[in-house]
Image: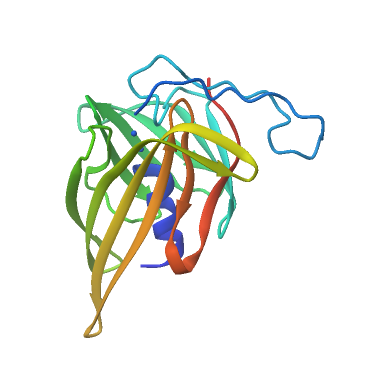
Length: 210
């Protein structure tokens, strides 16, 4: 499993996703170089507000990988309605909310084509699943440990944040390894940071929620 696979998992199915109740509106700063110089328009009133899937919404990330993710409309897969998510690097995935749970399918890069739970906004939720990526079986366990937190990312403070912890383990050529990550989801915005431990972080640089 390489860093690209983990980054996409964080950005799409969680990896990424969870609850709270406050406006995360950003005001336009004086400096034109500030990533939030463009007006930010958080989604405040929908059930999927911890990972908005409205068509045309965009998120631009920087850090160990830089890319822009776009919610690009509706799709039907397996007789179910999905929202398509794609990046400017060519990766495509699909997601949908089922009550408090965000379910996703990763299509490219080929992490998995199975439906997997990426987020549960129920307080203290815990869930696990297995994925075989590039021939390597990997076990994932997620825990929502904190809700209603605040976090500052690239100088911008987000309130009403859910903190999602990941532990994953896999074996390769007789060696076993257990790694982890921490994901931060802000209400009305989505994923604002993915801390992948020793590999580094992916941070939200700018966004627009339709």
